[in-house]
Image (tube, rainbow, N blue to C red; front, side, top):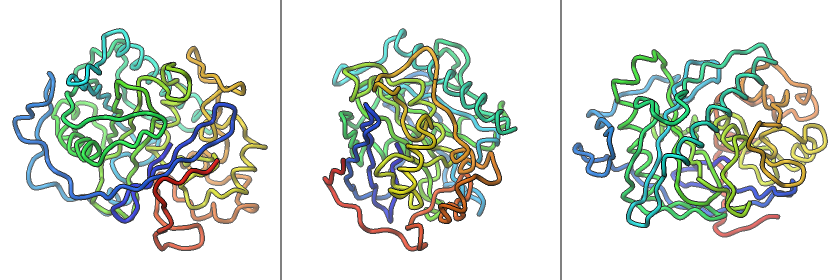
Length: 343
């Protein structure tokens, strides 16, 4: 699920697809300037993050268009960060942490295998230790702001600002330079039940909100406390590189009701349409979903797709890039409405 940044406002989009019936829950929260983490990082657990240097580095025109995660085929470091809310006894134990790391690696392996079918070779660098012991790629962090979770997962502005600042701090860590990757993205693991989402950079944001991240909850709010599935992890990671949601209520301007109906009929197993099995359950031993030619096109793994003639708005897709506005206009949309629910 992708959350859109819209003129300084977050528009939240949700999916409840237990039996492939999608539910959209939207709300708006004003976004203000990012507050930097103090240099001493009193909330960080070992290994502590390095403070962001001043002044904030300038980003090139290309970086401002893509954000911190550009194209899927670019070398990209994925940094795992396990968030702990000790004040409310919400923490990660070693077993759950290791399981999440393993599901993340499974998601990356699935992405690699699917992309290979289109002649592409992603270069996603993630923790392969199996238990989260790679100190450069997997961290722990003690939260200051509260976390909410639930089916809406309407996390507070304070939480989102804290994550933005943490991204800047972690990106400056010299230990990551050994991987030689220009791109970076963050996977934040929340120790509560919720609906996972991704904060992607939009080309319209320029140098703002540069670092991109996914928030992955320990358990799925829609499946009676089951862990979030590896398919969900793969779905959110693909958002970082420009894959849209194809379910009803998608915030992507070129995904309308007609395209959603087409995907449901033509590519019902596309991972960007649903991460659940046909009976509404989640699978943990493998990812049974597919990356359709339509999703591959949006990710830049294919130069074209069969749907271009039928859905000409897809011709505006720029791989790896999200933009504000509607399919017919470059102007930002303004029709977000707090509390609205579409089923």
